Length: 175
Image (tube, rainbow, N blue to C red):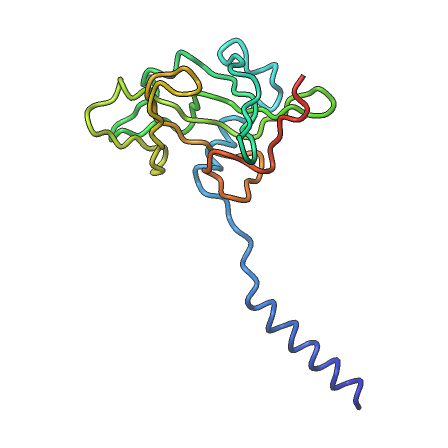
């Protein structure tokens, strides 16, 4: 009798706890759009010649990294700007790869970039409804002022899919 009460109580506790467990998160629509648009770039050899490496592996000063940006310079001047100051979510300006221990590069995300100089005054550029972050120039990248948005489509980011730095990405294996 005592054993059955314990099992009943344990079962009730388990049911109560699981009712508070968060539902499995669905991907933000932009993450899924980016995955569909960049599937072909899983193999870094397919990124060229349009995308070329820039800056080496970018890591944060106190945490996380971004990885190696393969940038398509022909897309930085507003070529993918749609109506309403929306950038085309299927044409990222940069593909982001993480160096692996075996020397390969793994696609982890993308970055949408647009130079501020090509936008009208007081812009609010977006990608699929997500506002882009303004980076004043000159900056550590040697670029003039620009707007950017990271999308971690291929690597989970504990801080969120659109946060610049990703604690799950490392430059430790950069050659």
